[in-house]
Image 1 (cartoon, rainbow, N blue to C red):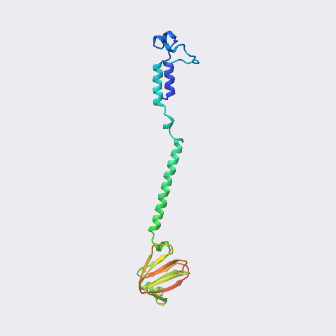
Image 2 (cartoon, rainbow, N blue to C red):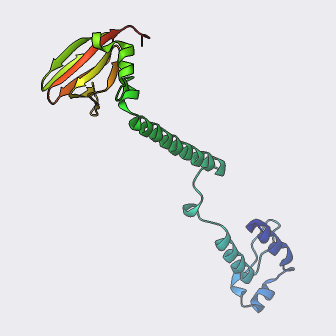
Image 3 (cartoon, one colour):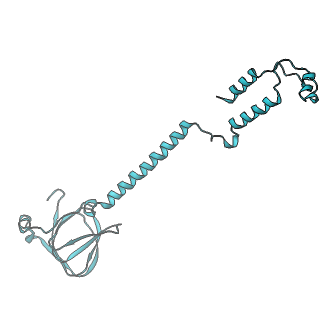
Amino acid sequence: MGPLLTLSRLWNHGRPGPCSCQDLAGQGLANFGKRRPTFGATVLPPTKVLFLSQILTKTLKPLSSATPVGSPATGLLLHRYRKSSTTSGLQLGAIKAMRMEKPLEELYKVRVERKVSTERLSELGVSKWSMWKTGKAKLPWDWQVDQLVYIEEGEVRVVPEGSKQFMQFVAGDLVRYPKWFEADLYFNGPYQERYSFRAYGDD
């Protein structure tokens, strides 16, 4: 029940009848003197005034403790926005994590076949490819065309440009480096490979 409705009911049901100064004096209120004009309203006894003030004090909230400006719908929208923003952040984090978990070979489109069989080597004609060898070294490299490499001896670490991770290929691996790929090659000892340049789409 609202405070104004309570006040109205108390006002109407507890309305005193005509009052005189003599009546007031009988109640110990002679010092009030003559009644002041109330514009048609009825003066409530002090006991009821005190009772109503207690109700209003308990019912009405002061401005300092009032609800912050903004409708409940606005708060709900803000809550949903924050929730969706958090969800979006989690989704982006998951995507980044997935990208980090992907092998570098997949990210940079470097194809590798491990422990290639002699049948596969014969099929490709690897024995007729050009040969290249080196010792311990670090070489910056960029590919202007696709290159197919078969490692006959040693190993190489391939660090893509701008990356802190590396791919590692060892003897017996068949590696295809894509065109425009750039990386630093690290050789920790004697290394030998056979290679063949390939056109795009030529396997």
